[in-house]
Each structure stands twice: as C-alpha cells, then as structure tokens.
Amino acid sequence: MDLATQFAIKNNPNLYRFLRENSYWYKELNRNPESIKQMEEKMKEYYKITPKDKMQELERKIELIRTFMEIMR
Image (cartoon, rainbow, N blue to C red; front, side, top):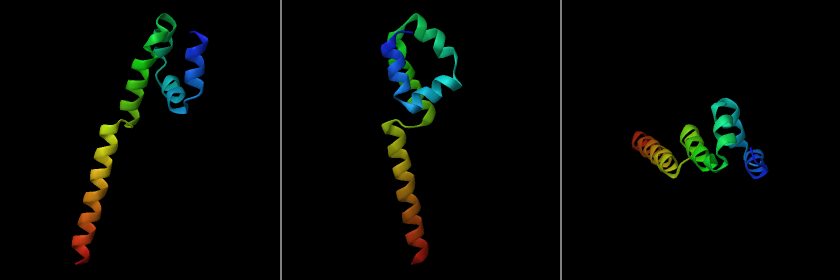
C-alpha cells in the first residue's frame, strides 16, 4: 500500500474503522491503491452517511415531529 493511501486512511477515522472491520480491503488496496475511492463509497453506504441517507434521516425526524405535534393538539 502506498504512503498516500495510508495517510488517507489514517486521517479518516471512519475509513480506518471500516478497513479494520473489512480486512479484505487490505489486499485490494495493496494491488490497486486507486481503489480507495471505491472503498470510501462502500464505507459511506455501510455507515449510512451518504447524502441520500442523511435526507431520509431528516425526513424521518420531520415526520416524528409532525406526529408529535398532531398528538399535542
């Protein structure tokens, strides 16, 4: 694994944790350091931090508040 890839992993705690939990990525990154972008995408899907997931969480919270307001009436 090249140094730039190692620094990118160490500087991102979520990426580091994902790599520790999914060790098969070590082999992939050793063979192809450019696959770190794919790994980041998989990490975001795994931890649900994509923009789509954030919007769904916001919608869920708004719906919860709306339901609470209806109950209070």
